[in-house]
Figure 1 (cartoon, helix red, strand yellow):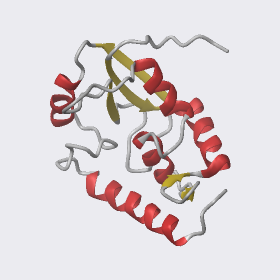
Figure 2 (figure 1 turned 120 degrees about the vertical axis):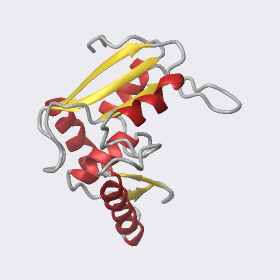
Figure 3 (figure 1 turned 30 degrees about the horizontal axis):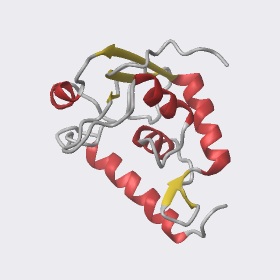
Length: 162
């Protein structure tokens, strides 16, 4: 297994893509930012940059809003799995998404002790079409929200996938 160049520290990360996941998006420009760890009212998550970036690259849509968004934009079929509460693209779809990301996704990061202090400012000041939270002002927001809602609705109508 290769060692990751991403450090196991707190920070902000950003994604761009060699080939955009949708025709209305530009290649090689920043499309999404995230933070690790997340600060919540009663605790701070245990995530760090390395864990979060790795999960986006190799996890599943149930645990990564970026993977959910990319899969929906790429036309992968979202399915209910397990007991039916979680939704992913299934083994084949998640593998296809991981391969697409390996071929196209590029990530950069900035170490920052309290990344939650920058997230709102970044989202409000940058054009980040793949971020939905705190980003209603973005021109792509309503289209992406609808696309994800349609994928979830179709998944609810299909049988649970094993």
